[in-house]
Image 1 (cartoon, helix red, strand yellow):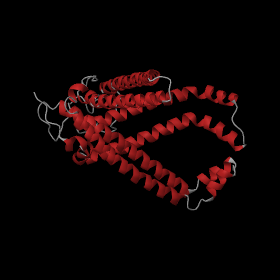
Image 2 (tube, helix red, strand yellow):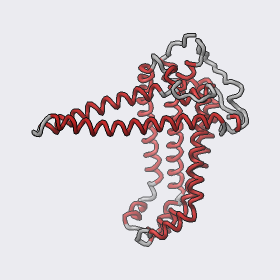
Image 3 (cartoon, helix red, strand yellow):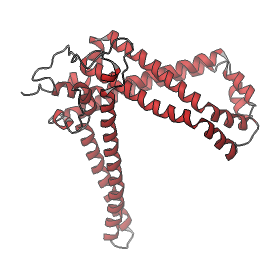
Image 4 (cartoon, one colour):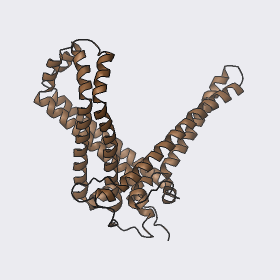
Length: 332
């Protein structure tokens, strides 16, 4: 059965349309995502806190930490660091899967919306394959660039123009490789969302979902990039305003840094309520914007995945298969 036509408005603003249909679910997922990020960052900080303490203590007396001190801390905290790193990977997968469920199924799992099961494992496999393909492409690009520059430069002779010819050839090759990267990135864009939407490992299946529409998807991403650019500028201005307000009564903060104040003085300065509130707001704004950024850029691929699986029609209220949302973690 023929797929529905690519609707540029729906594809570009799929996240915003999902938000309009499911404002409570979207806001709830934003809050849960922010909380999970807070737990993640707290765990990472706790794992690396002893190392930071050694570095800060050494800096407070005007010296660098010795190799023995660093190795001693790493030897005693390596298990916590490994757990934090692997925990970060699991958290990122759970967050990505939860957002893709919302963007494809139109809902989130009840209660705590994060799961770790079959969906997340398949999503990990897809992401790993995409990273591997990206790495292979990067290696091929670097080797090809060096070969083109050297080949055209030597072929032009030993005069002064040989270097210019080689550089121009390298620029043309670089632009070609960038165009190929964009093309394949668009063709694979639906793979993570299809993996969640169809409950199976989907990688090259994304080619079917993006067939004939990758040009429209490119336009959608360009519009999204413009939206994100202006949104990031607004967030930056808000953060700058909050930071300036928080430091309004702490002009000595910069003096303390310039004059190498002791650790106690710097910590006392950073513990001021105005600075704590300002830093908290700045971090919160950044986390919320990062969540928005990730969701918006996933939304085009999610729309393509939903369009591909629509069976000839694309309903506004998309329902999830019963087994995909709200099941026990072991079932994804």
